[in-house]
Length: 389
Image (cartoon, rainbow, N blue to C red; front, side):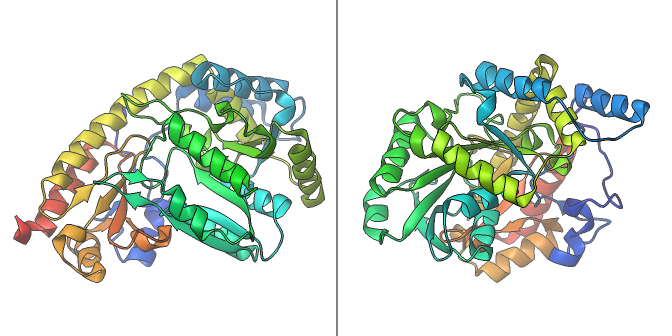
């Protein structure tokens, strides 16, 4: 397929394009939607074929015999990530925000502290707060434009009320691919403070050339407190299927989670299972390789343009398709640079403060769109900040 094809998503009940005007005031006809983390590309042909086969059959009953689906997950994790997964470890949730909420529900109680390394994906704090748990924000260190973790500070911040750590790997919005040494430090921190460690690895397939993602499951000595979360949805742009996997190696944690799943009556929809089974295949893998090459080209184009504007700095993107841009160097108030992006450039991008402590001077831009549109966004940003050049 051609990732350069412009697909008009307006008036298709698309959150990213149809809601940017009411939320951000960016005109629907002339604006560029760069906020919601889905891509403006069709999924691989193998996924489209699986859906067409369902349509051709024409009966949409209950899904049974998930052996092919579980086998596809096993194949993908072993072949793409070097991680052997037992099918009995796998739970399918209604996406990974639901997976996070289910972990909070299963492994913590109201009033417990849940640790986040911020700034981080905003839905984590939302579901933690909604569940009447305390969001404990451990702010990361911006070390020369790259996030690092300060465990001495985090150790001092702990009160003993914390029972869970939700960790984003690779990191959204900073784009970090954590090193094995850093993951070992995260695991040690979780053990020191007796925290269940939930590792959200939804972006693990979208890693830029020169970087390698290590699953937290491959870190020694953490299995008795580890919950892994993965999904096809981000990788293959099928977020509307609302399917994700919570993978739990430890039998005690698994039993606790299974009990909550049963109590909630949760089960996946057949469309998501057929799509995931098709995606996790050699054909899907070849498509992902092409996608990452294309995203890397978009990354280089966007970073060169943004970093060429005085006062703006795009954090080096090691993974994801979400550029995290710091406007601190402009000396502007947040309201001013946000106005320039939304009103002058007519671009809808996520506001940094929604990601927690450390996000005030940032905006997040989704570059998973045809290159022509990325080029246009770059030109608009240059124009919006031309007085600085």
